[in-house]
Length: 441
Image 1 (cartoon, rainbow, N blue to C red):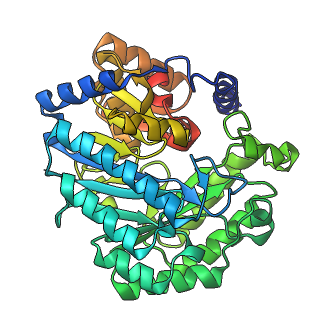
Image 2: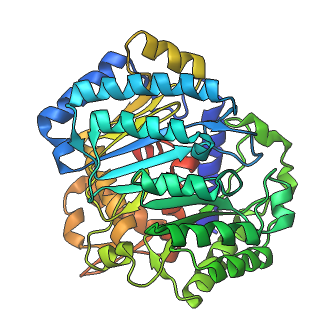
Image 3: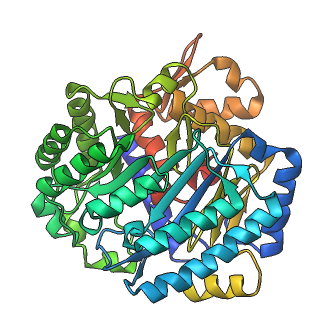
């Protein structure tokens, strides 16, 4: 019961703070371009980016707005509008390259959205040229490209692979037709099977599916049916994320009837059922919400204590700094989490003026940075040595985690509990709370 109350409290915090249009959370403050530039300079001087640099490129355009969408999105399919966006995106990359030094090797490159596969072949090639002008992508770089199954042809997938992207990611959300009907989107098992077959034949290293649960009209039984269909398709990786209706932040979600949503207890039951079914299907549990095939690099990294996590998800590549470019993109520096403008005209205006298009941020104290690292390490390795909590501040955090049933503390390890995995998923998932770790640490 305590865990359910905690989760309810988290969702009420999200709702109440979102009513303030100037900030997502009390700690978030307006951030000037000069302040962001100063943070970048400090990061370069400390050598933070030498320990691994990740880049997310955000392409917000979609042909329609899905009811369940919890991302920054713009409805547009006009290639001229996308070209104009790429003009500004090129400016943003040039600003970053000039400040941090061009040619830095990326450990991670993630192209997300929105629907990145809306771009034409010419635009995709142009995007890659923009990246090559400011960054270095080599054989060691983990490259991921998000696709929309009904907007990605075989020819386009071949181009994406030819441009150097080795992994594709599909935000499937759901395969149950009844649930999908309420979301405004529908992917048949046959369509997903065709896309995955094409991906394998083309030679992508991995196909990742993101699956939402807790959707309107969904139940444990329908989720199990969806997972049965999904596991039969045998994707490389599956990540689970629970759906939260938040009409204050996403006005289009107001059309979702709150009474059609599963309760918190039902969501928790879905998570347990999903994990049982995934493990029974031969997948290994990675981190707090990931499932991969045996021998997957993420599973190997977890067993060797090398698994890492940032806003892009789990990785086996060192990436201590994350830079985001594009509308609403997020950046994670050592002492600062920031986000770009979410209004297209404001984002364009900043870049036309030669300014980094940042809107707001959360500055982290050294204490918070240290505590955040511990939280991430727990989500990555599921256990840490008790010595990690030796100082007084960390001891206080450990006592809270134990009291809330999120970890067990023994003489040899501090271990994340099953309930802790659910709670940590809420804390660390960027879609459920952009700066939540900063506020909870």
